[in-house]
Amino acid sequence: MMTPQELRDLCTALRAKECRTDSELVDRIEADVQAYRDILAARATQLPPAELAERLPLMGWLIYETSWDCVQRIEASFDSDVTAPDVRQRSEAEFALVRRITDGARGLPWPEFAPRALGALRALALAESKRDTERGYDAAWTLHAEAQKKYVEFRDSLGAGEDTRPLRLQLDEVFLQLALAETGTACRTAERVIARWSDPSDEPAASGRSPAEEPARPDRSPAEERRWIQRMFRELTDGVAVGERAIDTAYQIEAEFGFADQVDEHRLTRQTALQNPGIMTARAASLLLAIRPAMQRCGLRPPPEFDSWELWEKDLLDRFTRAYAAIEKDVPGESKMDEGFQRQLVHVRLNLALLKPGFDLPSRRTDGPACLALNPLDDAAVEAMSSWLGGPSGSGRERALGAATMPMFIWSLIRCRGLGPADQGYQTWRIRWFSLDQHAKEPGRLDRVRWALEQARRLADDEDS
Image 1 (cartoon, rainbow, N blue to C red):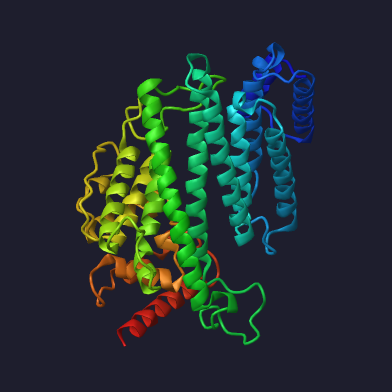
Image 2: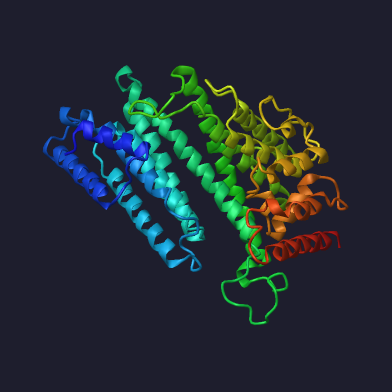
């Protein structure tokens, strides 16, 4: 078995990117897990024996670091037929390592004493979602559910004694990552479906027409749109809820323990623990808000705790605002907001401005781009934020509203704006700032966007007739 110091050194090296996970390291993890199980078989005790008391938490950390190390090298859409064979092969090799590491985590004896090992389930879920196929998304949600169930079981088994307080802290810190991954899967699924809806089939068009002129694919029928709208609503609703739990947990950790300056064997939650769940929760809430009219069009009622969709929307906007406040919270020891968080903040504000023109959302940040100071979120704010994101300081990677090609989603988004049938604000913005679309450089992309906007207009005409 690896000594505690060997485990500690490996974790530190992986975190510092001084080494990487390979098959040999996973072999060592599997061998140690089997050795731990042999000890359990020989001495079936409620608590880990002395020789494992220090090793188990460190093994949990090693499983956390190795699985995360691998998943970062898995390319998006690696399961697609159009992915280059060498890219697919490398990603599948990393995926296989993540699966082996996760199986090792599942096989740990006394798993509640290795709480960070739950991170392997998070990593495998993210790896599955990177397939960018419905099968992958389904598998990811199954893994998220497994991780949440184990978190509750481990929390209950540790009890409330002072001796298990450090392990409960580690478990709650891992929960933040589990929640982020779950909300991330909800956003990734929705954003991918919305942005890729009008992509042409992998098969060449027999007619020779452009993608914009091709009739809808059989798997892109109105019935399929309705099915995906309902699926996205369900998953984004869960994503917002678990994101809020992550924010609440981060506040609790801050109040009781404070945040850490760096990750080590004792602490996992750093000073930016509120910003990431705030961003992901706000993203999920924006997407959820956008599909509310589509849910009504499908003849569906709001969740049972709300008497009307209007009350549901008001509540969701309040939840969005609370998540937004977490993004803007000061980071201890930092005099200026990180540039990456600044970009995310502008994206979040822009999405809400497109959905609810004129919404009152004052920013408390005075250390970011000037466009943050513009309030309410009117046309001038939209133009300023779009210009900043499209410039050298920003990031043109609009993954949601700025990349939509799903006609029913676009129709729903326009209806969500609440400015009436003559409103062309989103359509005009979408073409004017086409460069913000994360797929803007793909051949035929602008044609597909124009096609989707036209299909959304026809949906509106059908409703009015």
